[in-house]
Image (tube, rainbow, N blue to C red; front, side):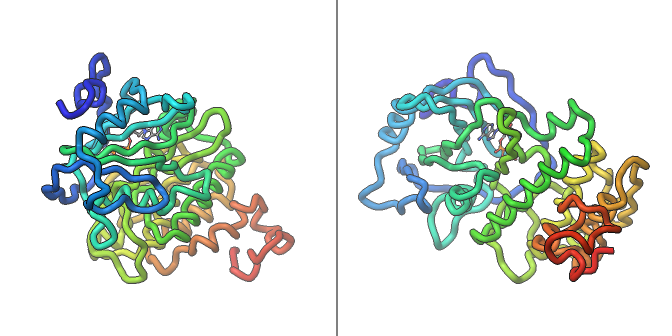
Length: 336
Ligand SMILES: Nc1ncnc2c1ncn2[C@@H]1O[C@H](COP(=O)(O)OP(=O)(O)OP(=O)(O)O)[C@@H](O)[C@H]1O
């Protein structure tokens, strides 16, 4: 096998963790059998004389990391806990078989787009998981990622807690807004924001956005292909097969907030997404209901921008009735 037994799809002693199959498929393509590796300052090197042979990349991996248990297995790869031998740092090793690569970093690099995008966002924001390095093996790509020592997917955390008090939800939601702002400033659209793709560092309370496998370069024009999770797709995609990056992200943030404060996705089927009727529990504050309703506006142009979301009274922790006294420009934005 080109991979250590513990990195092969059926690693010993670790039952597979089933992942959602709701994600839309992408396209793989056959590739070179050369091994490559990359540091993370930017996309990996192109296939030239610097490229190490496959065996060397594989050996480098074994020499530098001790691979442990399976953390998760999705439709697109397997993720293992590992330890960096040089300093004992916890890392996660994600192996993506070549034929499961959904999008490639055309023009910029011959690496999977997931790697190219992660390399762009990997520095400067605690709310985005860091790609430490990547390697190419004959049949797969290997991503070495930062791994919080004690962490849990937000989906699992919410399944245990049910829903969170608004104060707690606000702190987490703000972190996600910061992470999205960072990705935007790097020209990256994640396209699959949901509780399963947010890791909660249980020691620090920091959320980290993971899994850029559905991501894209940010563009001003409409996207006409969807990648991500269908139940998080916006109504304009369901009705017209088109969406703009920011408006679709705001829609998914509205759904995420529902999960945080209500413990569940508000819509179960496509039809409900188009109708967009949400039944709020009585305990939810007016401010929180207001921000969710705005994010889940049927018309993309009615949704707030990311910067407007930062100024919403609920995010600011100010009652709607007192918005004029809040710092910033909540009044100018007409939140009422
Ligand atoms: N850096 C990390 N540290 C700790 N755990 C991680 C890390 N990255 C991923 N995981 C775990 O592995 C799971 C699968 O990772 P990821 O979502 O990147 O893979 P995927 O194959 O693209 O999955 P999916 O089919 O859900 O999109 C995550 O949900 C998480 O539980």
